[in-house]
Image 1 (cartoon, one colour):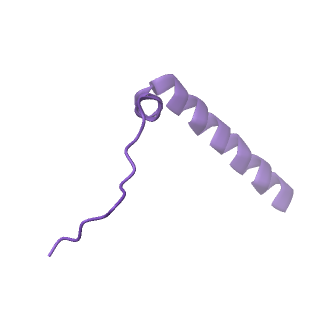
Image 2 (tube, rainbow, N blue to C red):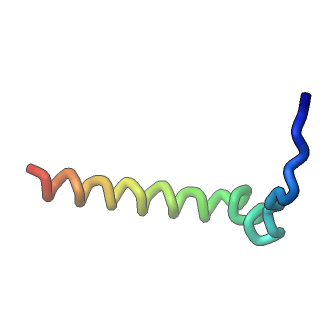
Length: 44
């Protein structure tokens, strides 16, 4: 039996755009990897 949720969030047009905009995804990928490299460098 499926339950009905009183409130379900729906992504905004901006959110949908950012999820499908390739240059934004590439930038986030690079930024996250640089942050991980910094954390790894500090731990060694």
